[in-house]
Length: 89
Image (cartoon, rainbow, N blue to C red; front, side, top):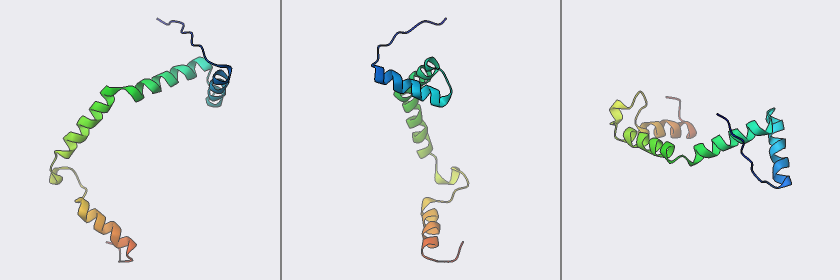
């Protein structure tokens, strides 16, 4: 079920929002809904906590089990050798 939400904004705020909506080819209501969804996503502590938990899980995986990438020291040596003019690896 939809509901009407009335928000009081200044004329300049309304004009800026209208210009943004027009630039995206959508009406003002849709632009405001999208802006609200983005704001909610940015504030979501659950999302941040999930990301941190995933990073912690990844950091617990031994290097040998992480995938095809070599150890960081080897990658840095390869990158630096390119800058030092050494032949490619």
